[in-house]
Length: 464
Image (cartoon, rainbow, N blue to C red):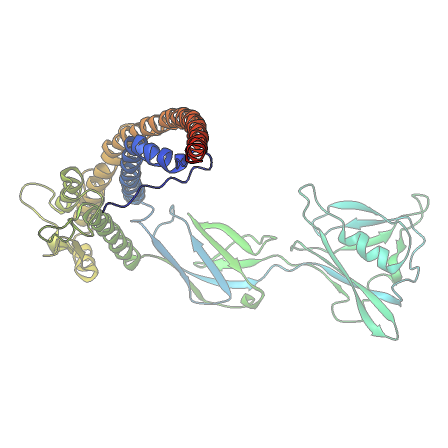
């Protein structure tokens, strides 16, 4: 016997909510298909954008070879750790001998009188400062305490906000301190800090008894840096950094360099850096090839089942063509290859680079190898052209594909939003219809119950 159908409506016995839900599921089916398509499209765009980003980076790397900054790298060395050397891209290969006659030092004073930090050490409201280069300045004092003098001197700065003095207090015991002031900048000359003349006629007053000339370094004059390069004595200078000592080469002396020499300063071609940069570039190309392979791979196919795994664009010939173009960059044309220079293909569909073979070829024929790799139509240029043709922000083929796909995604989102409105209206309509139906059924059910009661009453009366 067939089971009876039951309804759960409170008034009518009709399960309207369940019926409406099932009807709405049918109505939503087209929108659900749209959402599935949208999700697939978004996954595709994500994969294409990732590949596009990799191609942009590849073009940037290729361009770095074209500018020469990656290819032409120089290594600057000093035979002494006390002398630092750096070379820019404008430097040339060179080697010179240098002797350090003297290093630049800063002038400093240790003052004679000791005092407590809160003791008043001057009645002056300002101090006159004369630096070793002859520059003068006035330092205002809020009061005459030693601590105030120290903080005020440390607050003296040039027009660029750079501090000019280093002032501190050195303990002599029993809460007493001596003032020590040194100049930040190096260079020949003395540092003078005095109390202003009271009337412009009388001599300036000595701050804290003036510098203590009875101790070593109590009044230390600054010195200039003095070097001899290649047998030529250069003019002394106030800084320890010799800018452009040779074209594109800066040299800096440390305190330990005083009296050192002869020191060999050399700027040499960095072949290992060049080979390393090319090796990294080849790895970057292989990374793009692998990314394309993952995106276009087929999943595992089992008879009667949907493919499992695989990329979002299995077998896409457009993307695979990019891989082929990148691999073909090792062929400069005319049947030649770059294999003898270290660049080749392996059986796994990747580029390989032998740094040792490359360096040997470069030492034999620097100009020929340079032209083959970074010339106007060299290897890096060919790779850069391919990357740009795909990823250029305005004309790149892959960029335009992504823009087209994003436009389609926008259309899908618009359609889904329109469906949301239609479905909301449908839900409202069905709810009204079934609410009305429940009301009618409830009334009919009430009438049926009344009639049943009346019939039972009549039957009972006739029996009597």
